[in-house]
Length: 179
Image (cartoon, rainbow, N blue to C red):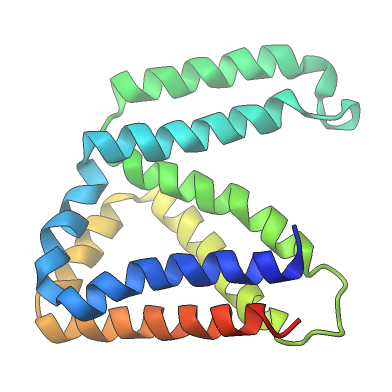
């Protein structure tokens, strides 16, 4: 992945999350509050996260337990399939956490050992915050529901948070074209 793409993709994602919060405020509260337990979001997010994880397992090198990849693949595929049946609560949140954690690697590797472009640190800080949130929300996914409850308790909070996300996303989008 190029450095420009590694900066542009998180920027566009932040713009896509921040714009509805800033411009619609409480109008999008229902959609955001429904996300953690949504069946459709579960199928999309957890399905994509599981698929990406299983792809990574299937392509393990021999140094990374590659000789056992078939066993690992089917074991994790069974766990993912059983998760839909046995633990369906907040599975959409866990799926987003998996996607964030797996997506962090290519974005961080794009700027690895690159000291000529200090603006990459804006992306790296965001990615590391995403990693921490991914680990925390993956272990306690109900915290996202609680956060949405707090965020939409007052209209000013959602607009402020949306403006923060939109501003940082626009900053990243602008930085993507400075390399």
